[in-house]
Length: 147
Image (cartoon, rainbow, N blue to C red; front, side, top):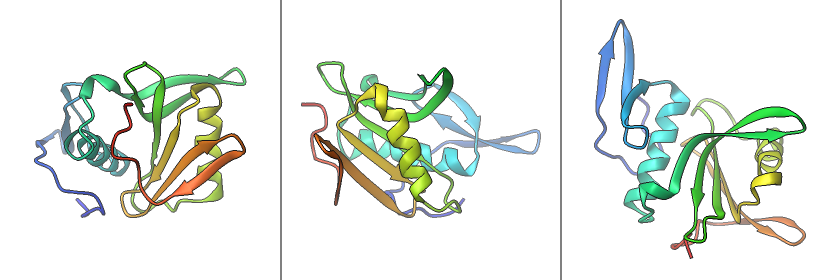
């Protein structure tokens, strides 16, 4: 798989019926290794191993409803008060990050009300902090998201 602009981690990969699978430590099972999943798994390991977020506070592919339509956010991180601290939108490495991607994550965040947003394709990362006026781009995520 492609080397991403995220720290490497010790991943378990297997092949079955001509498909590659990667072990997801949160779902505790092997999942099909698609390019977006490769990014998602890197982000999960970054959150756990570099930002010291407990896996108990991370949820993958959470269903959300917006304007009567079902949406799925890639990664949600809760804080200790059980409010959404971070919403992450992952794209495959070959998919560019566009204004439409920023709009997509802001729509997902209307009901979730996360304090921070992270948009990534594994190669490029955009971080935003929610403000009273909307969103402000920031250079990195804060060290402690769970306060």
